[in-house]
Length: 249
Image (cartoon, rainbow, N blue to C red; front, side, top):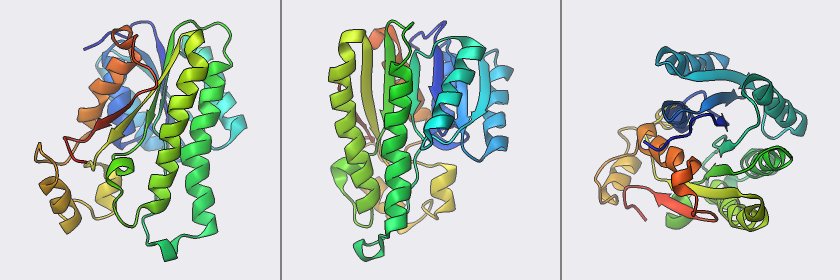
């Protein structure tokens, strides 16, 4: 696995699912990891316990990425514990799938604020650090921005905006040695998708049938990719939005 020794990483929305898998992979690659959560303190502490049990370094920090004061506090706590933040994974996201007629103003605000504004606020906080050299930001998008499934218009719109933000931010921050990339996971088996009834559903069966590698993704499929993008092995990669979906398009 690519090395991230001596780097400090923040993973947002890391109390479960893809975020937890990414946090663990970064810790295994040598990074000190700040496991961010908004509400699930118990889940975040479980992730920290899993990391430290294997000799890694991690702490859990509560913060709502859609709140600028919370984001600044998150970065201050990370710096206090481990030093300047050189790796940021914007994984925190919310979604509610519905037909076009079911999209409400409140849900628009909720998804756009967390999924897009949250990514902007955390990126600003990383870039505001004046004492960092090379750094890496990895935004977690969705393969839905390529496949455009029905009933996902709002979520896919928010993540399409994240993709565009990734490319623009890479151009602005590149001269400072800050790389910005995104990954687009396909349908995955997580606590969240299980709670939505996705596991074993007709939708999952259809997705698997459309996936050349023939299965649903897992958090373990994405962690190594993020650890690579965070490392010096990916030093010539920026402004990329990488499809990681087992071939599903």
